Length: 431
Image 1 (spheres, rainbow, N blue to C red):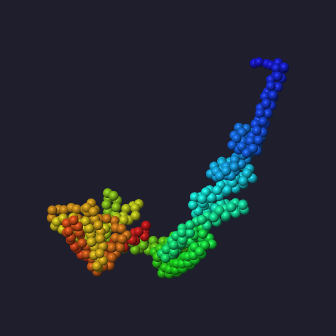
Image 2 (tube, rainbow, N blue to C red):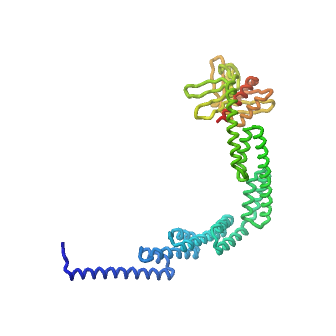
Image 3 (cartoon, rainbow, N blue to C red):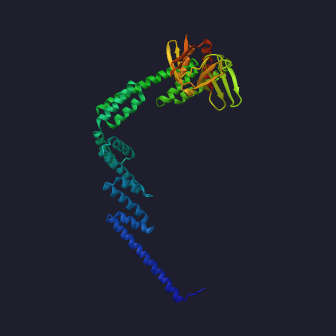
């Protein structure tokens, strides 16, 4: 350990003190230089200078202030995007400065709106002005935004406005009342005080009156359905009200309660009806894929017995029941049909079948071909027509070879269609 003499110790202490004074003098000099740069409007250089000073005195606060004035200068020079970016980068706890930054950002938005207006994008510019006005109570900004918005509205092509009005009229003719209201509100916002504005207000008032009338009618139907215990109708009507008119309903919770109550009662009713409906059907269980198949009495014992058409249901755990439609042609030779033409009391329907849609097999005595598919909603309408028909003929058509085969659907098949469809609809409600 080296022990310094008293004289040497004093010399070292004096040296340290002089070094600190020099450094302090340097910082003070740099600080004053940074301030001069700030006062001279050399903001970029001032930012660099105050950044270099770190936490010396109030350099950090000065840095925020200089950054704000730099952003302000950028805006005045027409660089609104750069100004907004610079202003957003300032993070300060100075309440007054934060207020100035917010106003500066709003002015940046107005400059953006003016740029859009000059580019002919008047609708977007007007929307920005409207947004700016909602964000502030500063009168100068509100006045500037209002003036710019008026210019946009004046510049906005009235052809576009009248196109919107034409669309609103079309929606009105089609009774799409919500669309009418949306379009009319847009017209009133972008072209206030014009003839189009007045016409749009008239259409909007008409649409609101029609919605009120429709809702009143639905509420009357709902009351009647509840009084008559027509629970499926109650569910349908309440769903329509909640989906299409929710914003116009004063007591939405009551409507939701009616729907829930109807669902519970309908479920109980279906439980009572489903058992007897399923008892009319033949039940087959597939052990391999754990599927229960419900077949009508019209289903033949063997697939090659005779021509027949029938529906059947598949039901498996963790899956909703599904419906299939099978139509079989049986003859002593191949037909290779590719289309079914179904004549129901004079109304003709067509079901096209590709080669791969048709399953074919034979035992050298009989040749059978059939299609088996999940019917679409439109095809279910065909089945419902068959059920109530007097006379239904199914024609198997080979369009390539111009060959046909006709057979008449029996009453047993019609009953089978009805029994399967009734059970399937009950099973769906149960889900």
